[in-house]
Length: 344
Image (cartoon, rainbow, N blue to C red; front, side, top):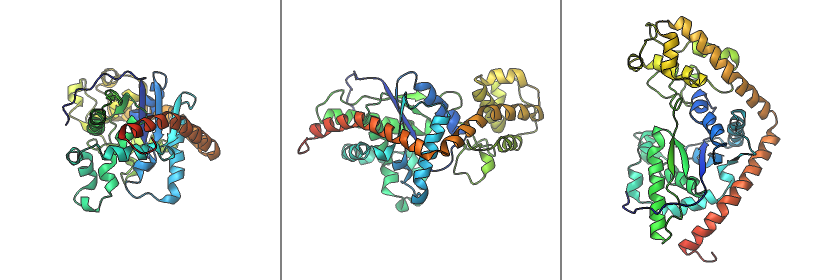
């Protein structure tokens, strides 16, 4: 999009990511995001937020939004994020996100946003009825990342394009305002095993909290009985598990369940097949159910315990927001000077 060659960034290494408070988190969120956040907090300075500004690009019930924010925070904590190591906060509590997003809207080009495929997918045939925020939210994402000068961002396939937009906005800002390497060029952290968990009812569709069938996903708050029942009723085919990854790749539902088993057990798909090749799902599903219960039931129990004390969650979120603001405010102050605002 731009032809500016960036000057190498020399600031600290930081990682940033967030999850929207728009519904219950599930196994896909846990494997694809939460466990990786918990690992990253030991490797670099980590900022993990609840993306409530992004959530309202589509209608959210105001009576539920604050509690949904607490639920995401509880999931972070239950999955192993430590507020003493990672900065955990609600996006809307750090106002610098929104102000930098407006400045970036004046830096980004309309043609760049026109190429964003996520808006086309989410708006469908009625884009004129979508909120302006749904169209411009990739610019807010860029502000989320760059207000902390984050150098690394965990991304799935569906978000790579937005990270490229962030890099373009950073390069254009640095060029336009004569500030080489002011903002970094954030690098993607490819999610690896478990990054893409598919629906238990349709191996060709990603596991989603918006799917009308609750049996399409395992929620983090599901009971032991719920988890076991959903694995038992997951869609499969009549054939036994194959011996090779090539054969497995042609069978979407089987591939998904083997991938889930591999991610939960910390093994590769090939290692799982080495143990279960030739065996039917009557053998494999009970083993997967036991593994899912063993891994996820304690997370759900911790979540329920945390949610029974909302005041403690609020304390953690408030402290996190204050810490995040301490990093974000100086960045925005520098941006205001570079742009030339009065009083900066």
